[in-house]
Image (cartoon, rainbow, N blue to C red; front, side, top):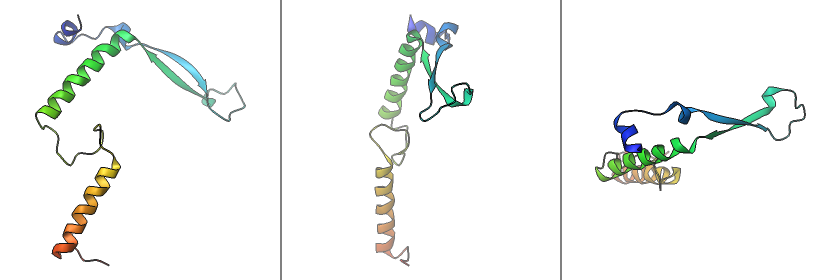
Length: 104
């Protein structure tokens, strides 16, 4: 069923709708003001299943074909800003060792 929806580029309207639950922000006292509330969007489970499947397919393609640059750190699982900082440190150290960068 889900493959048929993907093949025909169909995403049923009921899957696009969310139930909004108001959530009072911490430390607020005036309950009458709308700005004192955040919200939680509860999505239809029927739409979450093909979404997760599509994400898995895209990730499989990107990682199996080396589509991503090896220096890509953002929005990639198992990477963090720590990896990016370590890579920058390595590049800077190499530049210092080769005399391409001058230390202040």
